[in-house]
Image 1: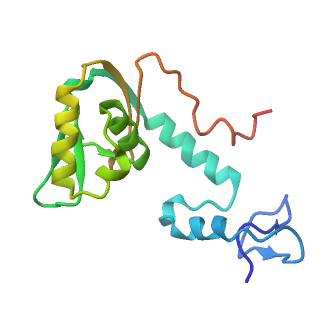
Image 2: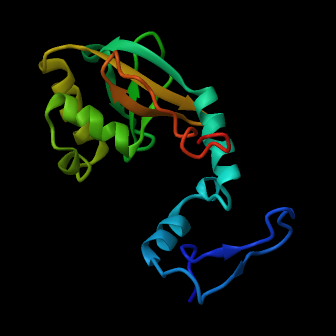
Length: 175
């Protein structure tokens, strides 16, 4: 069976109007790439670098950063969705859903093993994370969040961290 990792041929000057033709005699079969692509939600599957660039550029344009005191971040597990853990940043009551990456960064900040916290029910993981935030030495952290229908915490870094946008490596003008 052909996978997305095989070389995909299409005329470079013609718009895509149907499916791609796959030449299975070229390239190599890396099934992990294919399975990861198929396991993504529809809005995270890209058929071209142009589509990928437009999506990550749009997300970057909608992203905001702010610097907060780590102890002032509240962790919540809501009763209406017991599997969902959210964060509340100071000055904003909008719940922020951490991504897998930002959850790991926050866990690292408080010295908790993220892999273990992920095995716990959200309420218990939230209690542990909140305890860690309150009991560790407070420090300033930069929160990167996006809002394209759902407010997500994409990164938790130091206050002086410089951002390299995801859109830069796939930019058509990058050299």
